Amino acid sequence: MRQIVLDTETTGLEPSQGHRLIEIGCVEMVNRKLTGRHYHQYLNPEREVDAGAIEVHGITNEMLVDKPLFAQIADELLDFIRGADLIIHNAPFDLGFLNHELQLLGRGGERVQEFCTITDTLVLARQRHPGQKNNLDALCQRYGVDNSQRELHGALLDAEILADVYLMMTGGQTALALASSSEAETNAANPGDFAIRRLSAQRAALRVVSASADELAAHDQQLTKIDKASGGKTLFRQQ
Image (cartoon, rainbow, N blue to C red):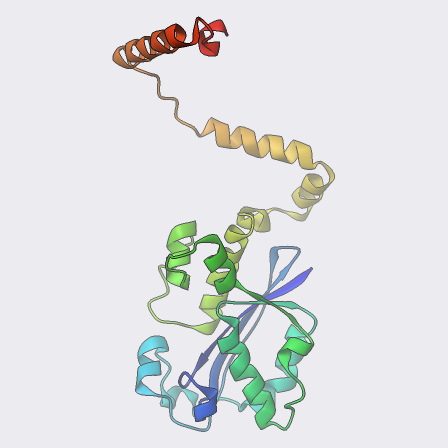
């Protein structure tokens, strides 16, 4: 299973108002493991970047003057993502800009959703954590993902962080991405053994806290009450 975690930065919020892409970042996963392959590109949007957008991502107009146009990298980008499951946080935003760029090239009939499947992690997060904050920073805090380098938004960095969040949110298997191929093969061939080793490691890390004398006495008093009320049928004492 090939998945591409994708993020973009833009000149503003609405492609319908003429805003454009200025950065695209993608990281590749195969069978839920980061492969090390990525795609990253800054773009010349052929327009000014809104001041409010610069405050979010820090990408200025001067930084983009010598960058390629979307038309120059479109085929390269589409070849990288084609056929993959795209993992995007708030997918309608990024897809709206990508499809708008394709439309400007006269390729409006070529929508990203037609050659990629889409997984929206914002939708997943809202299903798992209704009524809570589910932006990327909140999810990093919730799942223990390091986002200390994220002082400003950046497409490639955010894609890398989102990959970790997605793996934690859908199974907590980010550690498996660091396993060697031989270890991965062993784990796949002996899933029961791997589960036992993992459970043993978790148990070894647990701290045992014994009940105090007062707590034991209070517990015994409560059992006496239950025993009296049940006619001597307290299962805890029978065992």
